[in-house]
Length: 354
Image 1 (cartoon, rainbow, N blue to C red):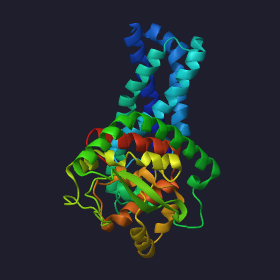
Image 2 (image 1 turned 90 degrees about the vertical axis):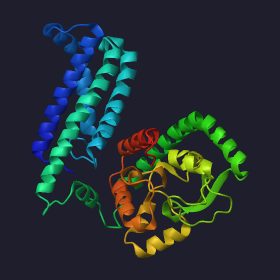
Image 3 (image 1 turned 180 degrees about the vertical axis):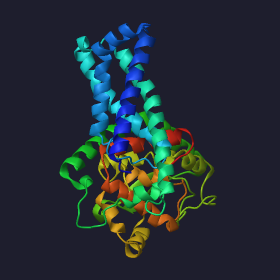
Image 4 (image 1 turned 30 degrees about the vertical axis):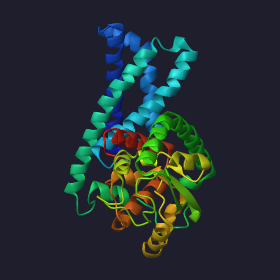
């Protein structure tokens, strides 16, 4: 949703108040100083930098222009990513120039408190806006339809995700985060390989041709979750071809981890539209308008559609999935990628695997 002038003013005032309160509470908890004069002196000396940087970061990331959140919980995800992005450079600067800040502990604690305060107030704004949108249903519809309808339909318009600078920055982030994730997940991947081999033998990995960016064919790598020679039919809930270990891997999304190798090879990105099998891709492209436009982006391990829809999808969901994919492509930013990765990680940890 795009914010009107009134909503922008309300958000700026609310965020400023919450950031200031978070800094005050953090300073009081760390230095045990609650008197207003001492708090003001400490705030002007140090914490005002936190608030200014966070306000500038929120403005730079577009959080005062529009919201991409489809639920009130999404507002927390966007808030967390924005505050983390704002905290990291401050930590570097305060480490190099300690005279600028009295305590990095105050910064970290203030950021944690701000996540709760700002995330809560922005979630309330989301709920209020959604109710008002429903009241004007004849002209606006629902919050979801309003968000997803803001998609350019001209195939001649190249979105920001296709710009050279965007391609480079997204690729660098993929290399950094995929390398870190691969190192962290290596013990899990080794244990998973052993379990698959013990239960049903080789092959441990499942390789299949998928359609990537600009229609390029590549071989996706996943842990095998079905019996050998299970075929290429679309998997369904309760599919008899899925092994016992495979069921666990699918439920926890561990079967997706080998795709980190596809990311490092440049065939995939961490975030993007999910790659389809060749036959399905050709069928969808022939029957669904603008389907080929999703090929402008590298396919991803996770994506905007995956974190906003249910786990088990079918070919009948293709149009709704496409609307999310096109929305992601039109509104891509590293900020959106980081938010999708955070939401994916959180939902996997809490067994809502995407």
